[in-house]
Length: 320
Image (cartoon, rainbow, N blue to C red; front, side, top):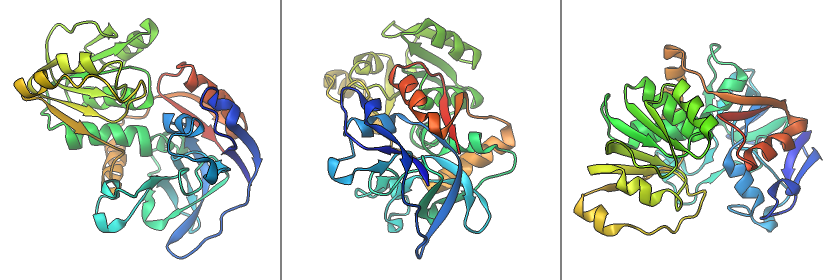
């Protein structure tokens, strides 16, 4: 079968580690299902894998991709939940030995993918395969941060750091829909303008002081934005962090954290029930993922380059 594979670890030029070509098709086994992939979406996780974060030389070649929508071996249209862990934890994202597809098990940038059957969520007919493929990582992460971790009421004030990425765009869309006042930051004027069109209350250059302190900050950038995030919070507010694309060793700002009784909350992906709930929310409300571009799988390298250069706004989707 045709697939997009991490053939080499290339920290300085991750796209150079990609290889497109034939790979062995997966074989079904007890408790696992073979899914014919119709669409798969790109995440920063895929770029980081090529840089060697979470993926070692010993596991190469590895088919990349942790998001997909397709048709399972029973003829059902499905969305793939990419977290593979011990179901005895209830929420497999709490399993310390969990992995995402493309870390231990082959990923979704292929004609077929093998996944635990319990990881399949029915795809409703109201969602296209391309839309559904955007949900399991970026949109699920945003959903879990906003509705599962932040402890906010409608009408709260929030800050989303770094408009443009899949998680950030999803956070803006979901937070606006929930009735929050949403501030957004970005170095790009074009991305700030697009965030305003999504309903953001205000979009400011990165590190610019907000006109008010907020109830919660959603930060996936890390080191470059951490000080700004901490100083943008009202007393008792919370930072919900799901990543550290600029580095994971900022000054902790501990004096401000304890004096203002701030909360720092980590969030990774989301649970299977949350993915089902997010899917239902999309159906009932009409909200849909923002797709930057759709490319055939054999042009995946174009999508990787666009993400590496920060060109996208929303999700990049590959079709099979």
